[in-house]
Image (cartoon, rainbow, N blue to C red; front, side, top):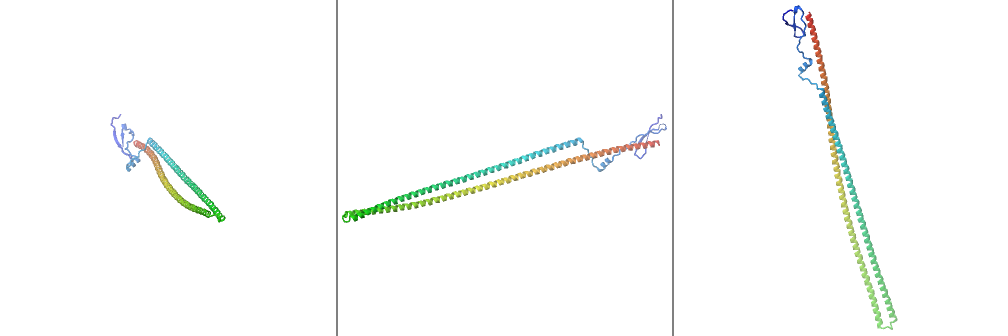
Length: 347
């Protein structure tokens, strides 16, 4: 065996600097060895270094699953919160409707009470009018009875006066007969008696006339007093009717004003309640729109994240394919270089 030392030499070539161990024992051909080439960066790495952008890391599948699960839980919680808000709004609307129904029932009850009170007032007024009419009828009956009694008294006085007149006439006739029959036979005494009887008859007639005059005067005074009493009663009745009418008109005006004020208050409350309900509904619609917008934005973000994850997965697959292709190209180049070195050695 040749004890000569190994000698290193450089082998030129087109594939870069190559260093091989060359042993020439007894003129035998050197054993070909694999060339050691410098690191050649891939095209993707060169593009990254030139552009200056950092490579995007691929998100792990477990992280994506956790994120999707978290988004699903958040979406479910948001939907539950929205359903709860809708239930609360429905409960609020139901409570508002119940309150409106109660208010309408209260208004109906108040209207019924007012109608009942109005009917009671009308019945009381009718009863008072009936009582007044009955009192006037009784008073008229009493006045008629008094007039009849006065007429009976006047008739009695007239009858008594007629009886007295007839008695006087009879006495006068007797006196005249006595005078005519006993004119000659009867003396001064008979004439004096006749004269006295005539004077008595004249006095009776005068008393009867005075009684008639007094009765007529009393009748006229009673009629005058009756007329004054009737006029006074009529004036009092008219005054009472006027006062009652004014009181009823005032009460009716106050009732109408109170009803108008109550109607205005109820209308104001209804308008305020409708405005509150409309504002609440508007706020609920705005909240629903906001939640829908948030849901859409969340869904859009989720879709964008999914698209980004898919894009990153595609890029990662492309990068893996490029690396595999680079490795295959490198192996092919190494094989070609080995073959070329082998051919050079043989040559």
